[in-house]
Image (cartoon, rainbow, N blue to C red; front, side, top):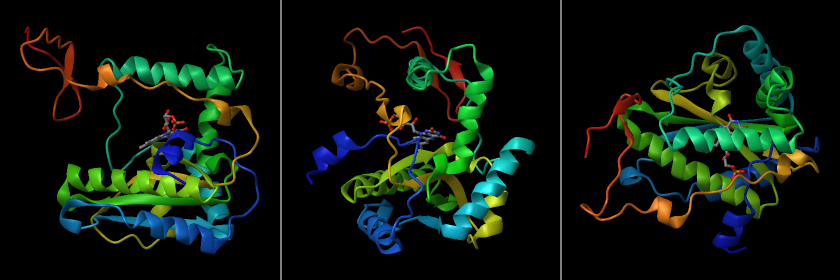
Length: 240
Ligand SMILES: Cc1cc2nc3c(=O)[nH]c(=O)nc-3n(C[C@H](O)[C@H](O)[C@H](O)COP(=O)(O)O)c2cc1C
């Protein structure tokens, strides 16, 4: 399969068939992702993989933590989204709920759908991705590169996957199940398995255009509305 085809075919899978995934296949996908580049080849990430009984135990424990515990991730979550991130996030959420037939005001079903994250959308396997704190944002960048490699390798292997930052909300639960070395912070979980025939998997959020992506040359009608500060909070931009 060509890389461009894997990129086009990949999408977040939020409904899985219960069929288990052969462990050798899973390990092959992860080994393919090991080809990823990283800062000075430091490979500042670790992965915890669970299938079978451990996956079931994690599903149970994370569902319980999500129902009763206060989220407390290794990284703070952003709630104040600057534009255009806010609009894109909203459009993606509304689009997913519409595909699932969940009305805008139906808070109960929206919350139930959010809780499905912690059931790994019924996937038979889940992985947790950690980045070493030593390299700061570059560890996280490297882990992101690794994550995309993993997602594309999964497509090539006929597997579906969903990266889930929601699964980083209760790192204490994940650490109860794995011997995570010191210094590694949990970034996200990744549900893995075979995609079910389900409307959740048909949703394709739109992407920005190339023109929206590319930053124009300085001095040619630059329009800055807001920018993000180093602490992730939105700051008012100076008049330009
Ligand atoms: C780092 C990261 C975290 C994500 N966290 C979640 C999550 O917690 N729950 C979820 O349903 N999707 C999650 N997603 C999936 C995104 O919502 C999805 O990638 C985006 O809407 C684009 O859709 P697509 O993956 O189908 O192309 C996450 C994706 C990434 C890359």
